[in-house]
Structure formats: C-alpha cells, structure tokens
Amino acid sequence: MSKRPGNRSQAIETIERTRDFIPYPQVVETTHRGERSWDIFSRLLKDRIVFLGTEVNDDVANIIIAQLLFL
Image 1 (cartoon, rainbow, N blue to C red):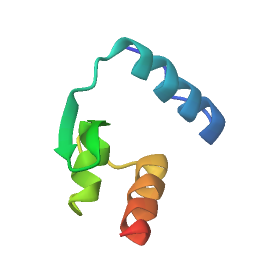
Image 2: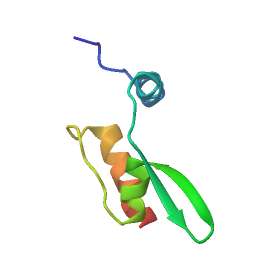
Image 3: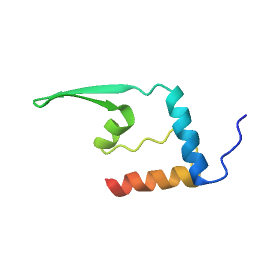
Image 4: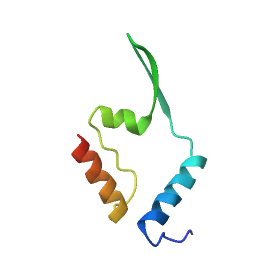
C-alpha cells in the first residue's frame, strides 16, 4: 500500500508520476479543420461530462469544483 501524500504539491507530483505509467485512452476527432487527438477525460469534459473515478478527498474535490466552474 502506498503512503498518502502529505500536501497538495506532493499529491500533484504523485498524480503526474502515475500518469506516466498509466496509458490514457485517446479519442481522435475528425472535423472540417482536420483531426485532433484528445485524452478521454478532456473529451468528456468538452461534452460537459465530469468523470469521477476515485474517492473524493480534498484534492479531488478541488479538481471537480474547477471543472464545474469551467463548464
């Protein structure tokens, strides 16, 4: 079991390190302007869908609030 990060910067660092090892699905969108590749979470947000795939802690709650404000 991994140790829980102690502060926000450690949490972000952990997420970024994990992101390097986990392949995120890509979606290719073709429009009249050409093709564009999106990571699946950005594409969902474009369609106004906020995906929650983990338990909610303070850091996750902040990310969700930021996404909702963006919408």
